[in-house]
Image (cartoon, rainbow, N blue to C red; front, side, top):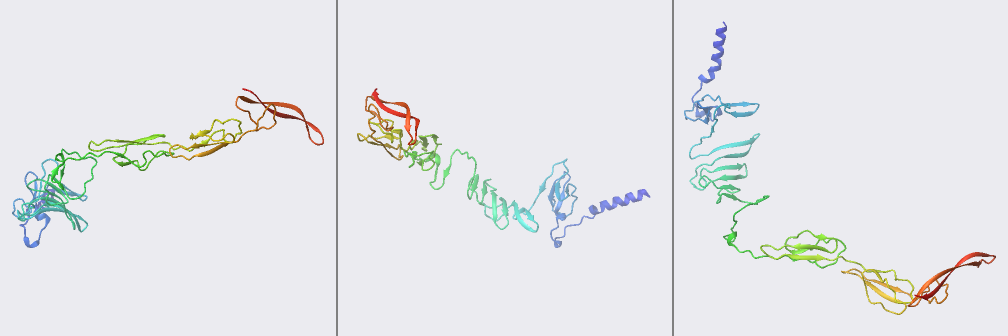
Length: 338
């Protein structure tokens, strides 16, 4: 009884293979009617053209993934369109055809016949390999060079022995490119309070600005052109020195704490200016004429003539407070030979 069931099971498993039918063109194209394998495991589209559903043991699917071969022999998938027709693979998103790739049909145009292509549905071909020249085209179906691109190219680095300039009909190595010299921009020579950042070069690329006042930079030449050295000085506003407003009997010193002092004028009072540097503002300063301390003076603004030095002394005495007298100190000023 067990032998009977084993024979029945074997008959069921072999039945689909023994009943392989001749391809009926009136039924349309059915995938299983065109998938065949030979004894080596190679899979093709009706390889022997007899329209028979052959055994395809090396083709399988698992969880939606298709595999070809069993991992032990060579596996070949062949698409055999007619000589004058195309062979292609289409890629769908649901029911929408998105991309396709394959061999172009023979149309009688030697520049197009049997080229390999990739196309985008609704757009057309985006990639072509010419059958005769093996030239590669991106955005063009007729590549004239090993790589022909119709459109812009963005690259991190490009290495080339030579470059052909189509607008001139010459290779770059055959062309003379005039040198371009670097040129400083309008910021050159103009005083600023901080690092200049604008109008540094009117020609040529910029090297980084250095310094903390003055500042320096270079505008580079190209194709053998000269480089331009540029600079911007530190702008300084004029500031009066400690002599400003201090009563003196002789021409004052310490005229400016910043900037350049201009000629002092007068014999008391005295006037002068502290001019700014590199476009900085100018400050106006003055010193009044002080009364002469002489041998004894109580005026704190008094001073001495040239050749004398002012000295002070403190007198401990009593001052009149109206109702009473109180102890007080009185400062005396006098001039002694220097």
